[in-house]
Amino acid sequence: MKKIALALCAGAALASSAAMAAQGDILARFRVINVNPDVKTTGLLASPLSAGVQDDTIPELDFTYMITNNVGAELILGTSRHSVTANRTALGGGNGSIGKVSVLPPTLTLQYHFNPEGAIRPYVGAGLNYTRFYRAGGLSTEVGGVSIKKNSFGPALQVGMDVPVAKNVFLNVDLKKIWIDTKASGNSGAINGVDLGRLEINPLVFGVGVGMKF
Image (cartoon, rainbow, N blue to C red; front, side, top):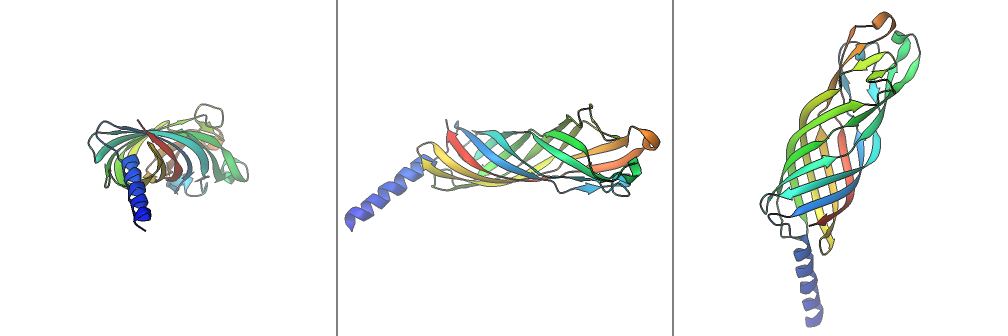
C-alpha cells in the first residue's frame, strides 16, 4: 500500500509540474471550434428579409503569453465562413441563402489563470475583437443584392481550462462570447442604396484542442 501511495504522489507531482504555467511561458493551442451565431437584426434585415447566419466548424490557432504566473494575454487566430439566409421576396426571389461571407475575427484577451501550478488550470478572460468581413458571395462585400460594412470592433469574454497529459503538453476546453455587428445596405434593384439595418452575429464559440508550453 505504501508503494502504491508513493506512486500516486509521484504521479500527482509529475502532473502538477507538467501543468505549471509560469511568467514568461508561451502556451500554444490548436483547437477545433464551432462558431454558433446568436443573430439579431434591425430595420429591413429583421422584416421583411428575416436575415440569419448559419454556424461553422473550423480549426483555430491561439497563443498565450504569461505576463505573470496568473495573468496571460491570448491572441486568437481563425477564420470562418457562413451562409447568410433571408426571405428573398423583397429582393425578387424566394426564401433561402443569399450567399456566403467569410469572417476573420482576431481576438485579444487578458486572462486570469486561477491555478497555474496545479494539475487543472481554469481561466477566465476578457478583451477586444476586430472582425474583417471578406469573400462575401465572391463580389467584394456584396451578397445577393446586399452590401455589408467590412469592419467591426466589439468585446469578447472567455472561460476555459487546461489539463496536462504529458510534460509541456495539455488538453484544452474553451468557451468564448464574441460581439460582432455590421451595417447592411441594398446594392441592386429597388433596394439599391437603401439602409437595410444592422446585423449582429454575436457568436458563441466552443472549442476543444491540444496545447504545448514553450
